[in-house]
Amino acid sequence: MALTKAKLIELIDNGDIDVGGGTGTLAIADGGTGATTAAGALTNLGAAPSDYWKTIYPVGTIYMSVVSNSPNTLFGGTWESLGGRFLIGADGTYTAGSTGGASTHALTTAELASHSHEQKLPTSDSGGSIYSSNGFSTGSGSFSSGISTGISGSGSAHNNMPPYLSVYMWKRTA
Image (cartoon, rainbow, N blue to C red; front, top):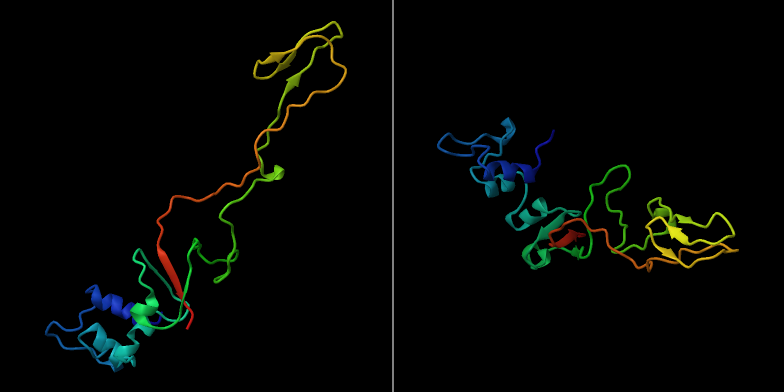
């Protein structure tokens, strides 16, 4: 596994790699950075200080924050806002960079849970009541035609959002 510049900065800043402390530095030829600071390590690995942000946030990187400051203002480069979207991990079904989904969805008949609307009719022409499975009865006498349970629901769209934290998101495009 190759050590990336971003991972190196993380390891140094977390104290996982000793880059000083009186023990000297590990030369680049020996697998080190030849530096005692993260900034020095980046410089020694070929990144100019003004380009550090390009190493940390390469094209295609997603930047998220609860503060509305655009990364364009913070770092430079070109960033596209990703407002109004959820992120999903890329895999064989969802390829990286693909988009989809909708903020609301109206269920189709095929998407409804399987269910029935049971109705019982009199068993003879001598009369009786219409009796539904919920115990409601209406009318009496014989009936020569079928009955309708009526229409229920409005078909309005609904959302399917899980609990969320709203953040500002941008994707670096250049």
